[in-house]
Length: 383
Image (cartoon, rainbow, N blue to C red; front, side, top):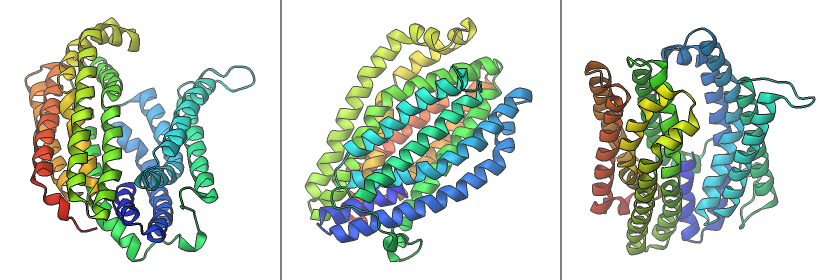
């Protein structure tokens, strides 16, 4: 929904068709809430199966199942927050989403700590307290977004009469966003299979712990790229709405350059700080021993990852959601998963071997997305 919203909203906003853009916002909020409710029920129902497929047993299985079921409640608020943020960004307002999502992060950290350790009169919930803090934080984000849009922002305002679940505008949002759904499902299921491979490495839970440490820290490397990608999506949509194709093309190129350069610099830091980072994130020396070589190898792929993220967002901003979807299908299922199994399990190369599949996926995705963007065929995408 947010992908379709940004592409469609920014086009109308760039063409100064503000009333249509406002209608897109209202439809997006309504549809996002409905779909979030559906997925909350699905994830909550499938939680035991999902946890079991990752190889969890005993207390780990019970904890993961509770976590997924409780977290599904937060989807209802997250859907509203992301749909509203997509529209605001499409209008060029990135500060309001930054404030709201930043508040979510701060509340999440504080509330989770309080629920985990239970100071004073608060109950000590242990691991369950983490997801409790997540739900509280996501609820805060959804409420803040609704309050902001109800008051009105940049000529955007929620209207009950405009909140419809199916009409021509919703069909346009769905037509643009549906390939992004397939892309997301493909990426999610691929990562799910990838995690299953990690869990079945000879090192077992130790490799899984080292993997999670690396993936979490890696987020610091690609967050700037995600920011450049989000900005480029909105600006490209607005430029195309004005009929300025030259600016639209240049925006994505500059965003990829800046995002890739920053990610490369972060990668240098990752390489030299790998021992310290792994020791800080996990106390087990065996996890550190496995994690450091893999994490250092990951440092060399930060720039391609950033480029892939930026071009994905840029193409989506133009409404071209099918190309990233097709590229994701190829890179995840024909590259990442098979190579991860071959190197990690068949050749018994451990975590680093499994990550070879991830590195190949990132490299191929960056190359194919670059070629698609350079072709310029996305400029004529119909929204």
